[in-house]
Length: 581
Image (cartoon, rainbow, N blue to C red; front, side):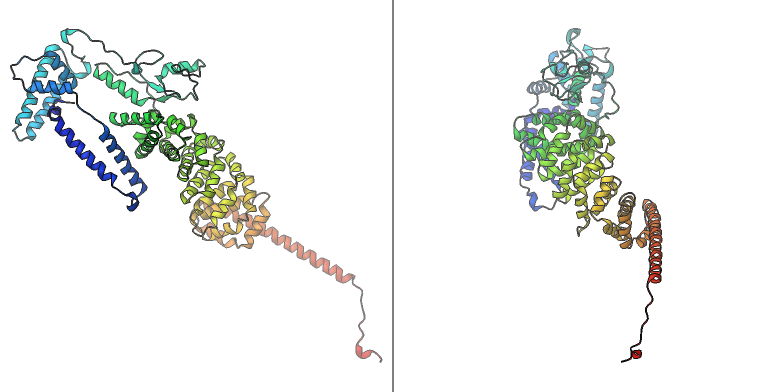
């Protein structure tokens, strides 16, 4: 707050009523929107719902200014310049208005000068009173501390020159060291400690929370960004240097404001509430906030939301499950949050939602697994979690979007060789073949990509060959998109090596593979050309072998015929005319 806000404080009832009226009108207007009748995207609808929720909170909040501050300002405004002023009143006003250094006062003088200039040289009564108030505070501050300089090297001014030692709030002290926290972190029980202290505690083979004595479900430490911000604000307000937090380069700074951080903190309290409606509302709003931008994703994760959202994956409310898994999906977009989600033990809950949740929750669970498996080491972790059979089920039962999410996640997981056999054993190949033959061809790209990956695995080769995929692959090479032609050629190339070689090449030859392959070798993608050339070489070798085998068979047949002819006995045919009747 600055001295230029004094006029607003004195007009508080009028301004508060005006704001409440506007908020009520907007809230009423948003209540009347029927989304089902409007052709708007889901994203726009979510943004409107978020704004609506914020307006509802604003209606419920009663942000009345400090009554004593109002009284003090009114008293000063009504006193003459020569009146004796109470120094304690001036001290309190200076602290509230954050005018405690020469630098602060100079900046405020410039702001008042700009206001006078904007008024065209006629400042009016209110600006004159503000100027008078600023002068009184400036005189008081200089009287109390004549040596005071800039804000950076100043201490809070005090009456009678006595130093006042600020009392550190208990919430800002580490429960272990009882010192002001520099780098507060949250453990699995939700308690906050100084990072160095709790790390030392855990390193001493303890597996319980020091404050609650509860057993820790995991040893992950989540930075308490909100509390650290509050500690910094408290230090600045009391003239203390904010504690220096150890630099952590993997966690970029956030641009979230203090009000946004406070809002996130309030939402986390609701996540922990036993009230199911509070859980639902908070999870839904965090879902939308995490979707909005990277700063929100950083702040929400640092505030400790991830373990709380994981707990809600087992909620009895399907809608709460959906919000929780989607919030985790949106948070996972930021790379640093992926490790936090995995280390917090989220996978069992995500897989459970993927298997048993509502359709939208299952879709978003699949998308979350895809996002996490972008990191190579997590492909192994996710594959070992039992996610692959659940993804195959979604590929079979899901909506169009669900099938897309499942196929994308399966493709990403099957980049790791160890997951390919799991996917084959879960029955993915017959499903993919069915998707390839759908009239709309809406899943053709994903299906061809999955087949190309699985064909490099022995179990995958056998399953694809058993599904009699060759005619379809030849058709794709002949008429598919550049990427699909490339993947079809790669699949055939893998099938043409090993136990399936002869059957694959014979079937391909029957389907007229040579012409499409020659065309692909000329006009395909670079990878497609390479695969086509390799496949042509194998097909030509196969044809040569076939020709040689045919020639040998022909020669063998002719030889057997010649030998047979030579071994037959000669017979004399007597003409019927020569028979003496």
